[in-house]
Image 1 (cartoon, one colour):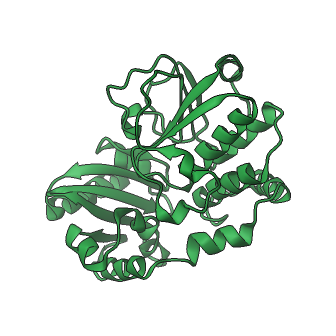
Image 2 (cartoon, helix red, strand yellow):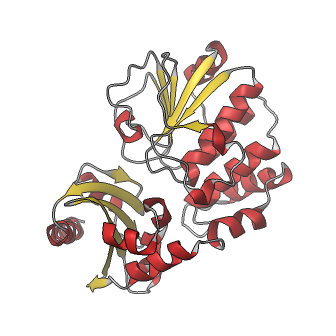
Length: 315
């Protein structure tokens, strides 16, 4: 994996960095940002870690997660934008940035960034950060290894998705040698759910509607209130209907406010959900993407079903 020379020079020349990632952060975004921050600080650099949203409870086992702040820094520092390539997706609209570098693996891209390192074929941003740390000739500590292993595991479906390669497994083997504990990480990610999160999943699965080979589920604000769950508790909910053998696309709608929804799409087979999400000004990967829509649930669902059918006919 070739790392841009400009990015290496940028990191070596600057003394401090503002590191940010996308809103509603997942394991890849958080783990990548934390590992990079720890690596840069081992070089004597100063870092500010930012996310508009709090670190989800699920990921508070990650070493140094408390470094994240929801506040924007008062002084303007060079920005490193991770796991997304649009500052709007990080809640940075209107924020003055003196210089910027983007490190991302998403297929849908903007033209933001003075320096752009985008690798759509990379399984996770975490694997890109791993190669960057190695190129900087830094020792990967146990804390870095735990963050990077989690980042890669989450975006590869813990090595179940088609982006799992021998290269990815070799990287993870080295991270284990550096101190990452795969059993502990898997236990925390998949087998330590709160009762409220489990109850919300039951409510969501009870909304299941199957149209041809498309599964649709949703969570309303009332469901969150009734179960005591939080929006962050819905991570991976879109994956469950995809487990059914005849389902090609799973769509999960999460209500944000009146007539506004965050839509998470997951697919298997030939449907490119990143292309579907782009129709609604969203984006992502071929098999995992998302977007926001302002519409009543019925209308939002009909628009999505129409877009999927049209896309299938055109391919």
